[in-house]
Length: 503
Image 1 (cartoon, rainbow, N blue to C red):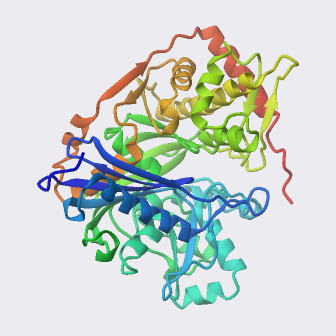
Image 2: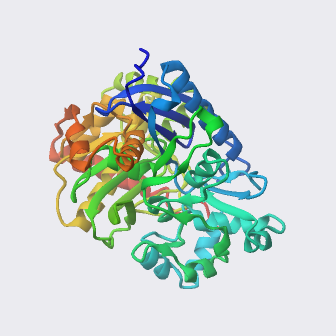
């Protein structure tokens, strides 16, 4: 349905690990139009994952143009653009030409695990944890940037002269969208770099020195909600304000209206990311959760506890692309539901190591408990259950940190469409799992941050009033069965830890 010329909208650009998307949101938070395009994944060596940054830009621009063209919405009807992105993925580019010097190193990439080990042995892990709220792990951007500066001839000297720009994907896209006029990031993305002091809210000179990163290469840190520049007019047809930036998981938390301390959400995407709002307090974790910045708005910073699972939907993709057990990802639910249980099979999807609470880059995936009676349906079901097992472990650790039980878990992401997965998740947690009417909450959060900045929405109370549940999944599993299943999962994980020995 074509929009009337009187209507105004917010455009969210959602740049994910496997695809670029553009979604237009109306004032009631509903989706008016959506476009999506996948792009190529590169695996140059085992444990290495790369993207072509120009592929990311071209696909993101293409879907932004397509969503306006196909919906009949004019660029002049877009009040603001919000940007959300796969986090930690690292780009280094030439400021003069705008060209990347190397493929982007993706958040899943493990090439700097040895470097992290060396720095931990040198006694630096505690300092990084205190300043950044993160563990010293190859997941984050800082060691990826060091690798680029170390391995591209002349890059560090050029960076010191101010000729190069570093950024996570938000910075790269803001640069391209503004025609090279804006080199920025927001605190939610800066807090994922191992370079940013999350309490003093600034790049940390001591951490920069430890990783040998020249300050001149860094973006300026701006609020998550606020106009940072205008889109180049030739891109979409109007100089639209770029007014919201947040990393994908923080944006999803905002889009789920988890705006008060104690509220939590889990996103089932390529990975799974469970975040708990802790308000103005940066809470230290005793259970290997991350302390991270959620967003900064009107001069106020909101903090989150986060548990990161590296292989969520990516495990389903592996069944599809690596094993050819299914031809489309959405086939897995019917296949898994064709058997009543896994027949004792456990899949531990540690294909790129394990995230929280283990933080073991040398763990590797395994399929355990198979018999002659095991079928692809059992493996499919074990894959879905593995996603829920990982998330359940993260939530339990997070509850111990917070000192209270969660009342409900709000969920989103592509996997949230899978009823079997969400019911099993509720059973494992023993609390309701709630799916909202709008499950595109990552893009919605970016839209909300941008819309607030230009007055499209008035305040966070209005945003909270727009949230609606579509379905609640109530737990139905006995305590004895839950305990037995979780015990089997933990035994399976123990067999995968430290599998790949560091060189």
